[in-house]
Length: 168
Image (cartoon, one colour):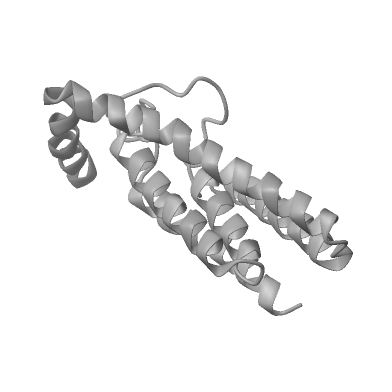
């Protein structure tokens, strides 16, 4: 109940200001695209530099993270906040497709693991992707697609897998 009240209060801002709501929607897609392009660029650069071991880690760690998120979603089966059996909130925009499971946030986890695998290659890009992950997390919460704990779970899982780059 406290979550719903908190969400409704912050969502009211976006409902009152159409420009802010449009910005939230555009930034959701733009940041997702940025993370994806950064990942593709990392793989291409590592292949061009013939850094095969780094390329293998750049594939294995995000794939491992994706699988971990999938398994955690299956384990917890947490419904999204807008689901009637969730918090029953009205989201600012609807998901076009995808999972009805919420925990942990896949967008946030993938941004953090991709940022992590960028860190030893190019620190500014790695940090930028991590910041994009934080912004995506906020956007996904503000839009009503995730609970705050989903975002924190995504940060933890993605950070854990991204941090493994330094173990190898």
